[in-house]
Image (cartoon, rainbow, N blue to C red; front, side, top):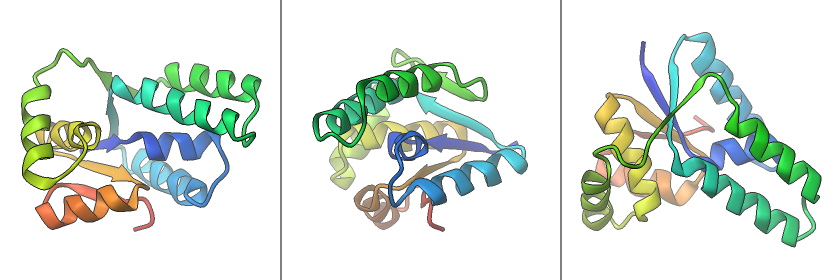
Length: 142
């Protein structure tokens, strides 16, 4: 079973209607139908919470919807979250420095490398930089 690492941009797009929402839903459906296991670092919860907070501040999302979204994300049964105390910090920092990635994005890439899987993301900048570096990151758009 292949590992698919899901980044925060994909998970937010599931709960907030935006350009990436349909591709994100489609990518996750394909991964689930193919029997791939879904993974993310625990950091995904706070990254999504921050994205929901920003959208509440811009009146794109109401407080109750934001709270419901983070609750639903926290309880996803088929998303295996990896503790931040796992041995990912060192390779994540190394990838971030070597490839001009944020440490947050590099964490997802490091997890994918560790699991022998691929990150799916709707973050175009992350996907482009990761592709240039030869890292296992793919766009939800295909």
